[in-house]
Length: 190
Image (cartoon, rainbow, N blue to C red):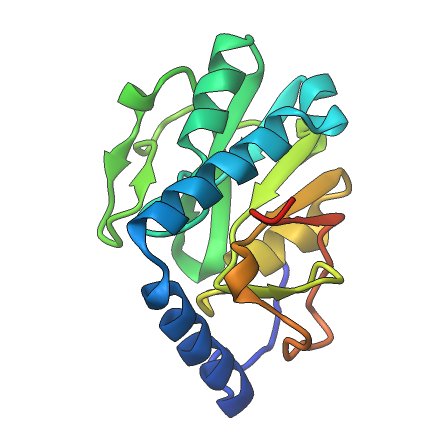
């Protein structure tokens, strides 16, 4: 297990999380829907996605960039699909699913596979779709502060696509030594 040694509640990160929440709440349902369609289209047309045999992605909830159509496409295409199951200590298991029926809501209201779901070694993942609260153009992400994806990205050596609404992209995001850049930022802006 990797120890990150970071302060998720630093004043700079708290400021960006608050500003991102303000920007997100200002978006209309039409803007959210159109943004989801644009991000999905970009992912489904992305060469690394088309070529990937095994993908890892978060299961979106709330106003996060929606991954459900991507999950459905990957499952229909016969790809191995893994989603996170969050464990104590900011760690995730990479759990293989075969349908949305494999997911249940957790204490955080995040859809996850139950305990005992088969896992996939990180080395088998070709492509990872990564969530964020906010990001910058270089692929640096600001998460919720649990360190789950920081730990994952520190060990992952494949292609990582950071999904972010354009409204949540900042010129600067506070970073720390443990932060890893994603391979590419994917937004809803063409």
